[in-house]
Image 1: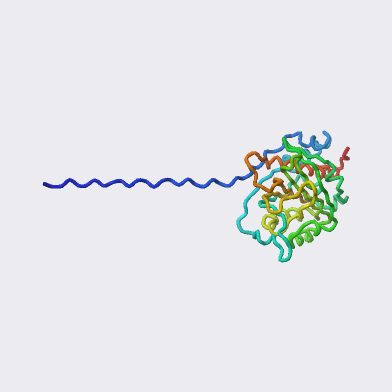
Image 2: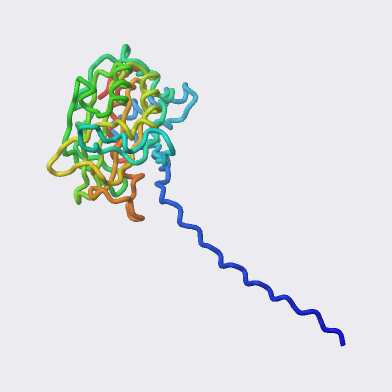
Amino acid sequence: MSRAPARRRRRAAPPRRTPPPSPRRTPPPPPLEENALARWGLDHRQQRILTIIAVTAGVIIAAVALTYAVTSLGGGVGAGEAESATGPVQARPDTYHGWASTSVFTPIAARTTDTQALTVKEVFGQKTLKAGKISLKLVATKLDGDCATAVWGAPLTERLAAAECSQALRGLYASADNRYVAQYTLFNLRDTEAANTLVQDLETLHRGGWAAALPAERAAMPRDGHTEASGHAMGHYAGLVWIGRGDGAEPAESDDFVTLSLAVRGVEKSVYRRIVAASGTPTQ
């Protein structure tokens, strides 16, 4: 008798591997509503001037949208370069993204047409900044005529010198419960090209040079913890937003870093007032 062919046993399929969860990213914020300029203290006439400037330039007031995004950088300046050969590790952001100036800022494209120096009262006169449910209190300010004293890192110092930086203003903020801390730095540079170059170069330079953290008894930017940053060219000005949790921990699901960024960017209303002034419309 002939034997029936033996049946082959099917091998069990290997178990599927669950891919690791992707790292948490802070999503970009939506544009501010149209009454944002009113909340910043600009009256109806001044708002119309800014709107006309934006439409004439072929853009919507997207510059007021305060876009914020964070990206993880591959390559570039290594994290180890944040440590000086003789000094301690300096506080710096883990992520950074730069945004170029738009045509909205054409009236203040150069310092030659916006010659009046900035003051601490002008930039940091508002002691409380709010956005959504986040409220920040001003805890420290500093104005430096020598921009090199407001930053660390030779590459950044050289960029500021090339940009003919004449002023660096820093303001440190903290939430009432000390959960959040934020620092805003505003540089007064030669022109829009210099501001654009600075915020773009910081895409790779931010790990080896950054704004020096302001000291304060109530709050401080965490030296070893997680922080995020963005740079914004606005005509001949460049503003650096630097935010984080007070304890240095990475943001949890309950943390709203988008709103935190929008809150601290309330400092920029001083720049928008300068657009109005440069346009020939007196502020009130």
